[in-house]
Amino acid sequence: MSEPVVIETDASPDAAIILLHGLGADGHDFEPIVSEMRLPAEARWRFVFPHAPHQPVTINGGMSMPSWYDILGLDRNSQVDEAGIRASVAFLRGLIAEQQAAGVARERIVVAGFSQGGAVALFSTLTDASPVAGVLALSTYLPLSDTVAREHASHGDVLPILMVHGEYDPVLPLALASQSRDAIEAMGYTVQWQTYPMPHSVCAEEIVLMRQWLLERLPI
Image (cartoon, rainbow, N blue to C red; front, side, top):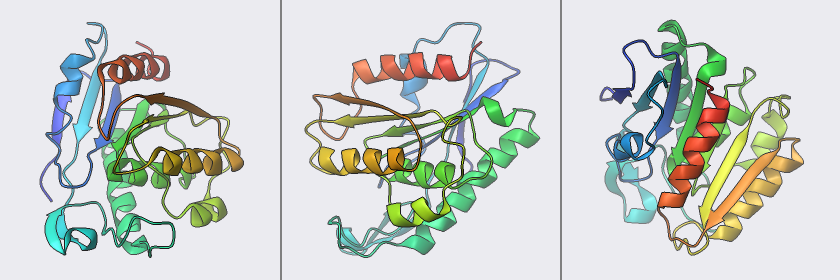
């Protein structure tokens, strides 16, 4: 797997944001967001944008593309590639461990993801015994919610979660995201929820919200 895209706002970062891209994209997809956030000069943050491996995706006719796991279908009764999700979760946790080894405290690490990347981010953070500073879930959903409900860690009071979704998302309907939010809250977590009149994308208002949320989680 290719080395992640890394952008640092300071020569000595004391915090890290690991953001997983969506299906068919790569680690460069969210590079522009760093400058768009217009962070304070005092922010000593490292942004890590990993690349998903290329693999066949069933719903796209078996075409090979960057994907964190196979997607067999989009309806509630579709089979889920649990092995693929768990493999990406293991990869993500390895990235977290790398940041810790580089001197970033775990409580200064935020895990984020868009769409398919957000699904991996949610599954990983909700089932990890050691919480991170927070999870940022963009235009995404929680896969295998019944499994997560059985395996989730008991730190709902110390894992901030922000879920943002488009009201006109044609790829992952708003109802799917709200069902995921309800399932996460039923496990004892508090979810900050925000929607915008947008499709399956990121809007300017959302970036402002992300900036504010990140500064609260990773005070400078």
